[in-house]
Image: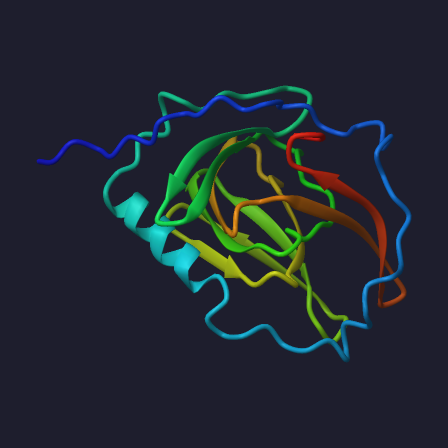
Length: 190
């Protein structure tokens, strides 16, 4: 049996999170989701293939993962086939803010536990999904979602982005409209 592929953990310039919002920038509202163009069907498909292959090959995540009582934990693992790979852990009740991934498309795969995803679709509807080990979710650059662990057991997920993750924009959703509340940048906020 072949050894599990290992992704070298690269040093991260910073694992800070913008908890205070001090770098938040007020910006124009995102275009109306009902009139925004649909992402191309292929967006995120490459990330899904990379994630599925890493899972199939038995990527070694257990020796790397950590858990943080205060917030979801994350680390950048490296680059595979042009996709930046991140490992995240989620304790019960931990979740991301409602966000997108800037100009990056991507995907995530649940490795352990379960994750809930709240997606804001182009027509303004909200859709909730629950993902379990082996599931791979993909998305285009305009995908706005919140991911979290609503279950009692810890969860671990593997994420892939292309081009590399440079920004994450945070949003609020009220009365069918998205409003930009901040932008986090690689190297400054994480």
